[in-house]
Image (spheres, rainbow, N blue to C red):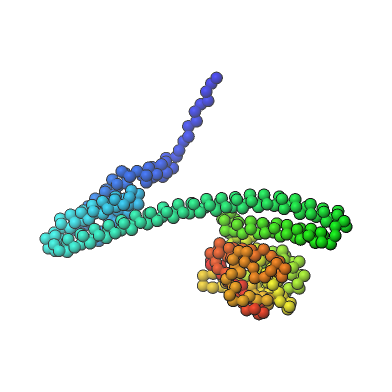
Length: 363
């Protein structure tokens, strides 16, 4: 049987030069060391032939930087000493030593100290960058693991919940006449709890997905996002007779689905936590020096000042489930959405006077 002809992979010369040789250079400590010494010699040669008229001591920092960053601290120290020796040799040849010996030694040791400090700080920066990269990689890996766990856990939890809800509904439909009032009440309570658990799982998934970078930011018309949020809340708005107005809203660089969710949660809360008055909600935006300041104002029940920070924490509720149903995730989700876009959210409120939710978005 004939063997297949071997395939030859061709690489363009430009790509080889820019990729392979550059990688070889950056990972070869001997080459970097020789190149750094060569640069020091070049700087000293230029300094000598210009009669020490050019202040080029700063150029000795280039090979010191290369040696410290790509080789290590001791290479930076060695190159610092070599740089000072070369520069002092140039000054010696130019006669500075004979006319100003004290200045000669003072400048030499001063520059040596400066170069050594530079090499040390550069090494510290290199170590910090390495630790930071490792931390970021660990956080990314941890976030990915948590997202996968949340997705799998939510799927595994939803399946039995659907089964429970289905059989309870069948029980109500087929055997409600044979059950007494107490049994029917128990079945209704379990159905409501299963429905609430299903909502809680969906909200937790939404919370875990915010800011994970899977959805790219894009230019979004805030007015369109607001209209979509109002469409989602249409039944609640009509039921409560809420009056919602808005000023012209700007275009912003955000994740569209998250921006809709932000408006939907804030307006939904304003409708839910209404007072005896007809709910009136106004949305506006003001151009600040470095961003946009949005506000959602309502005439609802208001919030006591000691709770204005607490309400943005996940699962924090100021009212019982019987008073105002919910999962306690809505405002925490709003906070995570705003902060994932580099902004900040807060509230100003007094009991019985309504609330104004502000969120700032930098541009």
